[in-house]
Length: 332
Image 1: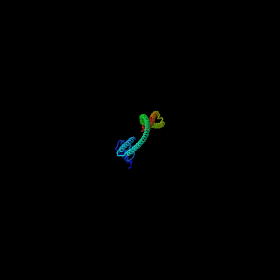
Image 2: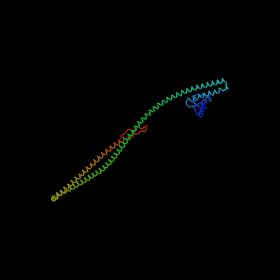
Image 3: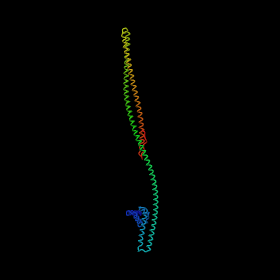
Image 4: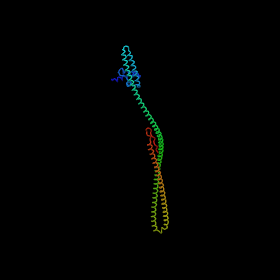
């Protein structure tokens, strides 16, 4: 084990035995001087002990030398020693004590200068830290003001976003209502188409029946005319015998011809009624188609507005950061 290690070990033992700082420095001074032959100084004592202020080892060292001088005088004043030896010993101790005291004072002055320099540096560092703290406080106040402004903006934007959401909900409800109306109109159009198809089929059936009746009447008329021709041929051959019957036959022919004209007129009237019904149904379907197209255009417009609102809502959602910015107002 080296000398420094032994000295440090002894000092650690003294620290356990002496809790009072001055007493500990005094014992360490005695340890260094008497056991290891090292002249103690204030800086060396503080280097080993490191307790208290820098003045504590200097005060303890001064007391140590005073006690040492007092003990030396007692020994020098012993009656058995010659006077010359007493004087020489006293002078030697006095010289040693003066040198040690001067050395201690020099060490103390150096330590004081170091302490003053460290204190000045610490004071300058403290001023720097104070200025930095003041600057940081100003920055913190500015940041707090900015945060308050951002919080107000966020609250306003949140209110605007809530209003836009309500408007979007109302627009969505209107769009849904229009969609339902479109569905109802489509259903009504389907029903109208079905009714129109049924009426058209009825008209076609009526037209076909009228055409068939007209064709039948024409065939009957042709047959009757053919019969009349045959009858006229027979009548010409039997003119003399059938003259009396000719007038009656002509009357019957005229009556049948009148019946044919009447039947034809009635069929034409039925055809005109069917055409009018067809035109009315066609106009109704066209009007409903226009209503459906208008409703579809309105639904497309409201859907576009809803999509615009949805994109604006997504764009202005709050983002978690320091404090999120309030979303910009979105138009429904």
